[in-house]
Image 1 (cartoon, rainbow, N blue to C red):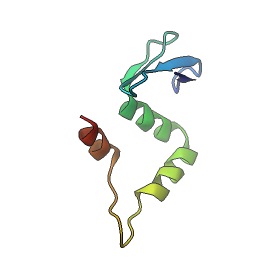
Image 2 (cartoon, one colour):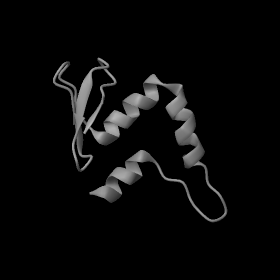
Image 3 (cartoon, rainbow, N blue to C red):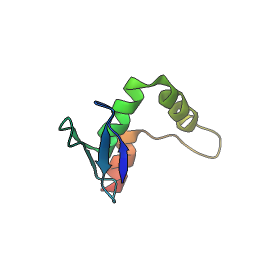
Image 4 (cartoon, helix red, strand yellow):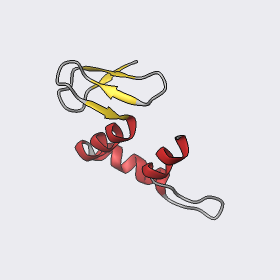
Length: 73
């Protein structure tokens, strides 16, 4: 799948299984988790959205991106 490279803003390739993001234009080669971290660092809008999902309630607990990556393995 094509996605926007956070480094050079050109088209990058997201693996079908979400395992990596690669950009042929600037040689970006990162895991999807690293890609999300870069996006969060570069755009506060995404950080705010993730904070909404990271909050806890009486019925659920929050987890981090690192936790999600560990569960995916």
